[in-house]
Length: 387
Image 1 (cartoon, rainbow, N blue to C red):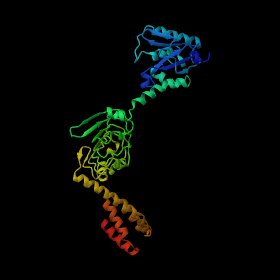
Image 2 (image 1 turned 30 degrees about the vertical axis):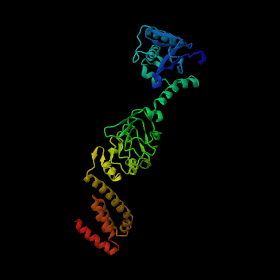
Image 3 (image 1 turned 180 degrees about the vertical axis):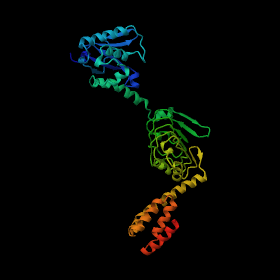
Image 4 (image 1 turned 135 degrees about the horizontal axis):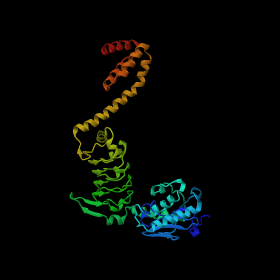
């Protein structure tokens, strides 16, 4: 007997249909049944109730057909196992977690020893449930409500959202707009605020990019903690010229270069990047201080003069190492022009250099050797010092 979805006949099939609300939140959750060799569906519909040809929550949207050749005794054993499982569940109380429609189907498969197995359970069923949708309509019925549910759950910033949002004067005498915990995916339409706020709170949303910001000349504080920000637009300084406080705690900024755009904020003084992957990188604090010269408080800690000087030293070291590396190509030619014994000794000195001072010393000796004779004298002195 072949499958006939118009008559709702699914011989030797395990069938599936979505459960309202539960399947909208998670499409993998649904109601399951098993069909006899003639295609009649049986399902554990509730406590002490096994439905026949009247599947709870509607007709199937998805099915997987099993082979009766994997059952000892064929179609007869298949039907007998379903009857036995039905009789067992006619005496059971429905339990959403461990004694439900899925366990009813698993019991039927265990009783028929399908595939020589007796370990069928909810997890094994999920891992082996790959099958077919009942046409395109079955696909839509399975996933369209879930897509609609999540689409409506994501709030877009609009005039109505701003008007309904909590607006108040905070303890710092600033006019604040709270748009927190609204599942906002992107920043958009903030121009509807008409630049009337000193503080905008976008915390606890799903924002991935700090972009699409309109020109807000009044805004001084932007709170964006507990989001997923991984990108900051380069025009942030042009659009937020008075921004002095930016909180980006617990986001996804992964590289030190991700914060470079903040250098365009001329009045930024208070910055928090705690909880971002970049905050765990080497020289993170020195890099931020060097790059964002206007920042006075980083991660709720005031920047001390010593730390600021450390950032400047880091910059100088990078420049000096770059200069040394740049002259290395010229020094190689000087080394190659020397006798083999001298080349060997020079290589030993270079390999033994452990500090920046050692490298500079070798570099000065090589640069001072403009002629073969001067090179010999320089090398003699160098070897004497080394001894």
